[in-house]
Image (tube, rainbow, N blue to C red; front, side, top):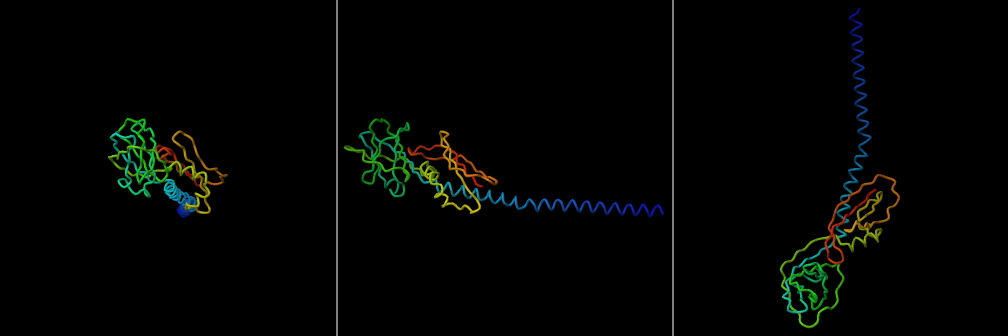
Length: 234
């Protein structure tokens, strides 16, 4: 009689363990199913943020050609033939500097970039070409020498001019980006001197995803600087 009672108790205990274990498994499955949509949403937003970063930097960037030239210093002006650098329509207008980074007066004449050498004694000069620069005027008269090109380097940079234009006309700029209707985006750019330039951030009522990186950018004087670009997605 005692053995039958003991066996019955053991069976009851075994059933209880199985029931508890089953409830625990169902609890874990419930947590997994509840968090999956959230995890999927976060991953999708991270992918979207990276895609918007690439699109944004492409729209803010343009090419700049850097040319190192040698001047003999026998004339007041040295002339760089555009045909030796590239097509004028492709490389844009030029800015010139001496070895100390001092900007020199430049002008455009007969498919060439003219550099006024008045006030400089340096023979090695740098010329920077980009469509982002403003067209120069005429600066040379009298004797002109032809410069010798030492090296040519092409690069793609974010331009301060484009950044300011994008932020000041952000609604129009966003029209060129693949932003889903359910998402909103804002942008901020910190210049090399620490000055932030940003869009007007609207009221945020949801999770925020931010991507911020250091980028090289070019100012209006063809100086390459470091700033920070921040993209805010919510």
